[in-house]
Length: 471
Image (tube, rainbow, N blue to C red; front, top):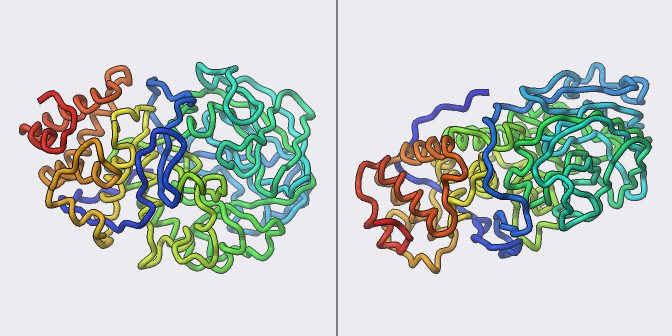
């Protein structure tokens, strides 16, 4: 799908919340912030990837049993996905609102950030999984990770994609019995690294796929098209769990939230899609090889922050709580705080092509550029946190937080418009990873490109803020 084309505005408008985040050096962040952590144990080294394709194509295989044989009647329900869904080599699995799940066979591409099997299991319930095929994940194939028993390159089955969940089942061959350790949706996929490494696109150059068969008497967790979300009979979903899918986004929800919010879910998904499209407009490329980005609740990220970027974007469960005013299903409504959603998607767009270390001492600041660009285009109001940025009062580099780094970066936007950053990212997209230095030298890379694009000496701005540069 082509990105929405809008005029890039020179002024900044942003609506901030407590979810702005800090720039951490490990997995730890301030609770209540939206952030992406850096994990020294992750496999996130500087390598390049091939170009990303737009959209998420999800080929569908209803398995060895058709919908009627598996106890699910998907005919006549316009909201149930029963045909190829999108563009690209991705997999989605259509299921109806009630079980039993039966047996389904489908492809699992190594590059896909987890396939939702459509199966919901209660803790203690089981599924049998078979796999055949060969794939290439990355150079770390065979290496262990810091959570769970599996190694890079394994086919892994897991519930709910909880962050660094050790309850991973390594699947090899046939007849592997999976037992759910908690209630939730069963996901399967190649293991490219630990969960944090995957945020940095460690599976982006994976190739090949495996044929996977899942058999279970468990319940189903259907996927609903966002455009039809208001029409769906959520009360018929026996598992109480659905996923809503739009052009670029998937949101995993309990029906206790989706049902009451049915009338506004389409608007929420459209807002998230618009963020994605505006981010694509600024970056000129898309993350995760163009797959849809999933938002999923995860209690395990609460000690780390409000949300954790990647695919999935893991959220504090409050964001799917039907009583919380700023829940994700309300994202399209006036007055709802949407900064965090734009910010986390912004992180994903800063990691395109696995080049991320240009964000020295500013890992949380660059995503905020994407947030401001998107919220500016949508006319959302300015918040006091960034109202000070246009004054250009320098903050000492050593003491930067996410907002100080943002104010520095915004000085060049104020002077030269969003076109400057669009061109910066265009050049970054064409740059080999080995040509982007790490550490303080990364600022030399940033400085030289900004100066060339602006066609003016920007060293005084760098010097005033104490930012390392070659001037």
